[in-house]
Length: 198
Image (cartoon, rainbow, N blue to C red; front, side, top):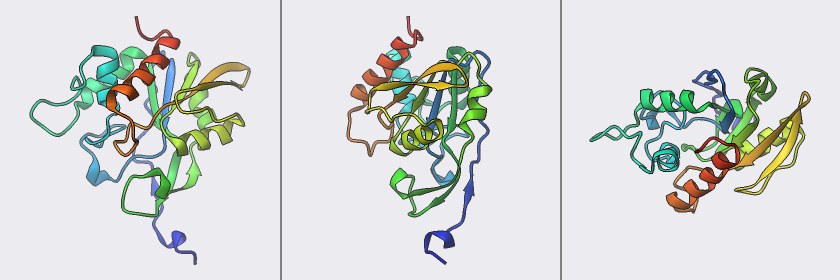
């Protein structure tokens, strides 16, 4: 038995978040271990900056979704924000093995990719997908038989007659070597291009 096969397979602990009127589907790779969660939703690690990025882009406030005085995000505030702005969330893998005791994509083995076609069928008004990391980008592009864009870039792809855009965003992990404000600027560019910011 290969060493990786001796490690347990983890199934995705969350259901896809696909609000009515979803215009943008954001796909990461897989959630971190539950001991790193600060809330029961996507990007739950308090050291991950996704919700700080969203706070900066939409409200000019990096702490918009932080519970004051606590090391956790406001799940209700985050989900209401995503529903209001038509942002869907899931991941490109629904079963993985962790090859190391951390959340790094480098040490995730995708056992079963998510059915991204089923996700896209569930959001007929969605015109764009944003992948948030190298593994998510490669997994999604393989499923859709499209090119992998450069970080900060986009490519067009066709899904069942629907022309869509695939954006590759910088990872919101603090391990990714880019300042929070610069990451937020890249995300802001995507949201403006999709007409999701005033």
